[in-house]
Image (tube, rainbow over all chains, first blue to last red; front, side):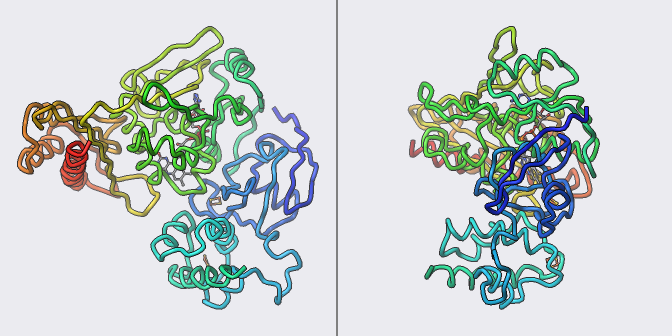
Length: 162
Length: 291
Ligand SMILES: Cc1cc2nc3c(=O)[nH]c(=O)nc-3n(C[C@H](O)[C@H](O)[C@H](O)COP(=O)(O)OP(=O)(O)OC[C@H]3O[C@@H](n4cnc5c(N)ncnc54)[C@H](O)[C@@H]3O)c2cc1C
Ligand code: FES
Ligand code: FES
């Protein structure tokens, strides 16, 4: 039952090898085994979006995947967005969220950014409706979403030149 | 909210997966996208002893043309179906339905076959597959069989699949000539399960009268519910606003027996059922005229 499986997972460009129980959720693996606690856990049943990561480049919920399924795959977490985490080097998405007050407590923010990163790559000039649909799978209890939508518009403008 | 322990197998071929299913039978569950199964395990509503992970089966992830329609491998991600030009071209009703299923993050992982095998009564695809006369290929170590949608969807979260069988392929036949289609649902937020939803197809005869119509609801019963009395009333008729209105009334009051819950009362669900029937029948008729 508790057979351990050896897995190799690349997270933010670095390869990790670990032994895991099959039932270990990918979100818990990222937080507890690897120590990357920027991936938050809100509901653990796929509804809130706080645990969103990029799995082979696509946004997915890490709370409804098993770590053992990530064997051989590539993951990016919120920590991968700004490798040196310095204020000057904030990713345009992060800078825009700060500028537009797109967060209050910040619990949801990592999940929003990991959802929005691939969205803005595919939709460099989104309409307000596009933005609202893109974030419909992420819940924020603080902002009322308006400032998040504003932040995404600013981010889109900033990233267009890049 | 942690899943119970289980034994995990990750076969890389269908034959190998079918061997595990045969060996473990009732104790085993196939793991597709996990977007319904893992939440259920996190809640401990499901406690399978063995999970057979199908994600390594590249041979079940495909979208191919099939005799004018399309054939979709069970492990094809919902997002791939949504983005497939072939699906948009050959079976546009499916194409239009996909964005209503959950959110992009869920569709990136959730599979076409897993959604149908899960048979959630609030799920869009079982109703759409029924309206389109989809056929389901089930396979086990001892052979394969084809099922119609009526045969496949048995009850609440229950299909006709035997414990050792896997759903491997879904074939969506082409629509007949002079046929229009439409889909609509009402949910509380974009991406939520629908309070009521419905898919329709309408086929006109040479003279522009209704030759046949299908109206299939979801979220109003234990499985997809076809409004047979409503569509029978349309057969041979001119599809005027009055005829469509009368059929929508029959659908909402006689064909369905919807549940009431905190999100919607029985009366509200019937009201939505009528309004939606009117909209999809009118839209499908308009498309049939152009076909
Ligand atoms: C927040 C959220 C919102 C959602 N909203 C919607 C929605 O609006 N509409 C909707 O339709 N769905 C919705 N879903 C469910 C989603 O579409 C799931 O992806 C889908 O229901 C199950 O597909 P899966 O591939 O994830 O299957 P899994 O979760 O892996 O499996 C589901 C069940 O089917 C069985 N199974 C899977 N594949 C096979 C197979 N090939 N053969 C035999 N049995 C199999 C499994 O053993 C399991 O019992 C939502 C999910 C979440 C988390
Ligand atoms: S913690 Fe994963 S979606 Fe809520
Ligand atoms: S900022 Fe608090 S939940 Fe979004």
